[in-house]
Each structure stands twice: as C-alpha cells, then as structure tokens.
Length: 381
Image 1 (tube, one colour):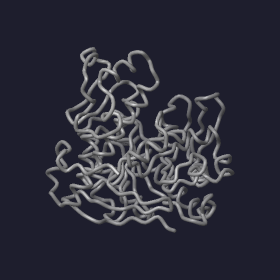
Image 2: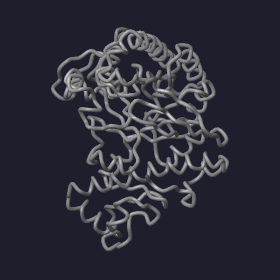
Image 3: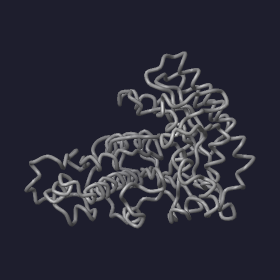
Image 4: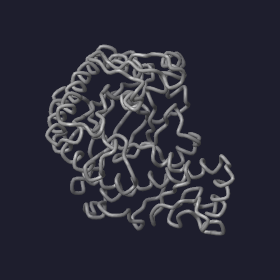
C-alpha cells in the first residue's frame, strides 16, 4: 500500500485533504503531537486516541541513541514497539544535531556529533539518517538537512542551502535503493519528504523549493523556521515557499507554533504542522484557552471553581477546576503536567478540527484568519 494524498475541499488558499497510510488516514490540515522518544510526555496512547490524534512524531536522533534503531527493527518497528496503530512521522535528526551547537562538526559527508547522554561520538549522514528511519518504520520520514542558524548572512545561508540540497539527493537515492527494508513492508510503504531551507531570504527559499521539487519527493516540508526570527518573518518565508511548492503534494511546516499561528498557516495552505509547545508549556503551567493563555500558577486561581476553558469539552475541563489544577502544580504533583498536557493537546487538536470543518463548509478564509470560532466546532471523535 502506497502512502497517498488527495485534496477534498478548498476555502481560499486553505485546503482540506486526506493522507492515506498503512496505519490509517490522516485528515489535513493536521497538528501532530510530538512524541520525542516514542511517547508524548505524560499522555498514554489511549488518551491520545480519545483526543483524536491521527499521527504523532518520533525523534530519529533520540531513538537512535536509546533504545537504538536496530533493536526497534528487531521488535517489528516503532509502531509495534510503542503499541501505536495509527500513523507515525519521524524527523531526520537534523534539527536535534543542529541544536547541539558546540558538540557537532558539519562536513560534506555529514555531521559528527557527541551524544548529550554520554559524550560518545557519532556520525549522521543522509544515508545513515534514512537507514535509521527505514528501520524505525514510520509512515512519513524526512530527508536529512542542515538547519541554518539565525541570524546568518546571505552567503552563509546559500552555502547551507546548497548542502541541504546535496543531502536531499543523497537521502532520496538511498531511500529508493533500500525502501523495501521497512519492517512492515508487506503491508505498506513509507513517504519520503524533502525539506526546503533558505533561511530568512525569500529568493533562497524559492530557489530551494524549486530545486527540491525537481527531485520529485512525495511531500515537501519547510524547515529552519521558529529559530529566533520574528513571527512576521516566519509567515513571510512560509508564503514565499508555498508559492513554489506543488499543489497536489502535502506541505509540512516544521516546529510551529501557537494556536493562532497554526490557524494562520492552515489558512495559507499548509497541510501539516507540529510543535512541542502544547506539551512543553503544559509542564510549565501555561494553558491555552479560547480566551487566551492562562498561567495556572497565578494565585488568582487558588479559589477559582471554573474549568480551564468553559468552551472546551476535554476530560480535564469536564472534571477539574482551576483551583485544583493550580494546587497540583504548586505542590509539584506529577499529575499536574499530565492533566495540563491533555488539555493543551485537546485545544490544539480541536482547533485543527474546527479549521478543517470550516474549509469543508466553504465558509471562506475570513473565519480562519482570526480566532477559532466555537460555533462551528465539531464534536471530538
């Protein structure tokens, strides 16, 4: 079974589509929770299923270090290892290696880096990254890229972009030669996604997109954003890139963003997004609601008997008060992070469901460019 993508409805530039994988359908635009080491922090898989998560992410760098891709392969692949029967995406490890800064050295061959766990030395090449991702067996996998630092001048950015393009070709060549080795190859195939770089320069973004598209990947991602630039610049670079990407292939913006931002990017024509923000913010007591952000640590919630968000139907808002959630957080109870995370993920996933519903209704792009409207929110599955 090949991974396929089809578009079903439009509303302005926004589009509703369906990504079919061997592990189920993914309705787009979609927000994908991040499960770094094969788990979304603090949330059991059955809860993710109840929330309607159709696809989650695994982190190639972390899974390579622990427990190791060969062990995962021997156990039947990441789906079976983590008991997740829905779709999975793995990144290439490029961003994690980029974030190691002083612990890495980049060459034409790849990146030599030291493990953040024990200081041991490792080499990631495009071929090695794809080898690991094939062994893990995710439905959607990413070409190996260099995430350009910010700020970077035009010369440095072009150099980085050219390296990413050469690595993209090597990634695709290795994938085509070895794609049959995926642990569950008898039941389906993987989708390899090329990554567009180009820093904060519109002309380089367009050139990177054009040359990546020439390699004929099954999907295209926009990488190297949310690395310190302004939100306006992020939006501009997404816009520059979307103009070039083919309309019949899935478009993925990596590592974004706040709820209002993912709505805006979906309105621009983005199909897939991911971010650690809803889970990371939850562990620090920051909750997202239909009325804005809420810091549950605040003393004003000590006697507040209201739910986090009266418009939210998640199991946290249906049962617990702000006062109780604040009590859990200030006492250091681990349940606080788990419940906060469930709410934040519910809010993000409900937001995307609302956007998809609006596109399918053909209500026009205006409703997507502002705050999420509660009066068209569909029921959670």
